[in-house]
Image (cartoon, rainbow, N blue to C red; front, side, top):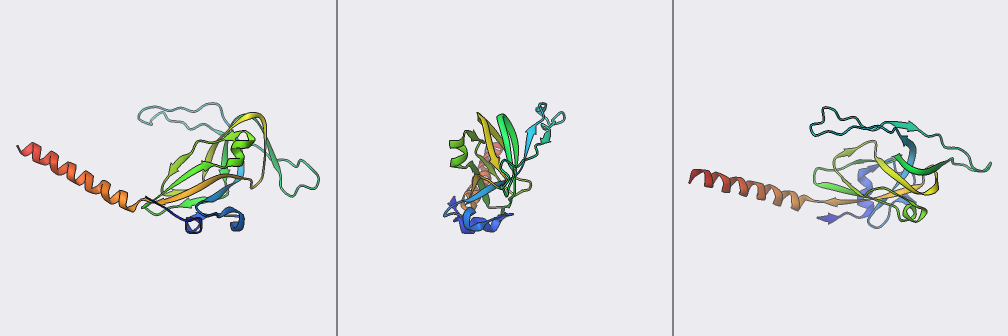
Length: 174
């Protein structure tokens, strides 16, 4: 598995609003576009026939000071869906790790790190606020995405599956 440079990774990230501040040595920042409160009911079952995702209720940002160019969300201790400005379009031999931005953690919020593949649009995070209130400004950098090329791993996985099928076939013949 090979970690791509931030400059190379940026080629697979659409919607970057300010490359100078978002593209780093080995990562790209993801920024906040919209925030939603979580509708309290979702359903998850084994087969998916009764699956219902939790709903989203938009939260309107507001101006905190008269001279603010961008608006703010004031989030209480709870969980929220965050829609990022950016989207991902990864090659078949790539995987992305999305992790919380350090400043988000120090401010009292977090989201679970996650791996994604393919085309991700919209790019959503489940934000947990652990402090009494977290203020988030429009376009705030909330997460980092790191892209990995997994071509060698995919080839070895295919070879491994092929070899195990051959071994099973041999056992059946005996």
